Amino acid sequence: MSERSAAKKPTNLSLDQGVLTEARSFGVNLSQAAEAGLRRAIADAKAEAWRRDNARALADSNSWVEEHGLPLDRFRQF
Image (cartoon, rainbow, N blue to C red; front, side, top):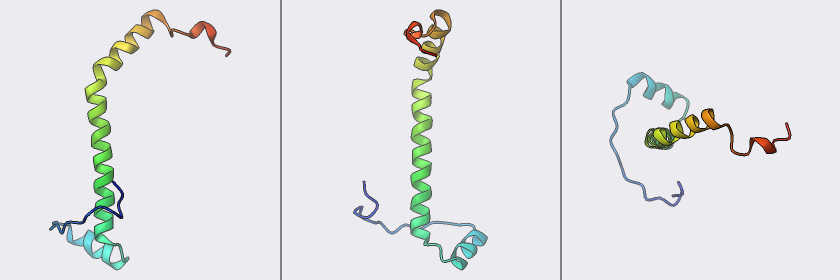
């Protein structure tokens, strides 16, 4: 979803007073900064969920490669 076209919803946040004061002193747009931080946190959470959900398959694949080698290894030019 595009940041510009998404509907905005007013939200109350509790923030560290020192962080808030410093952000305001530099003219940081609190809504944009909070949204950017949330987008990063969501991306990190999705990546962690993917790793967790696929850990078994990745371990199985790594075990197979350790036992049998890379399937196309004989075609490597390096």
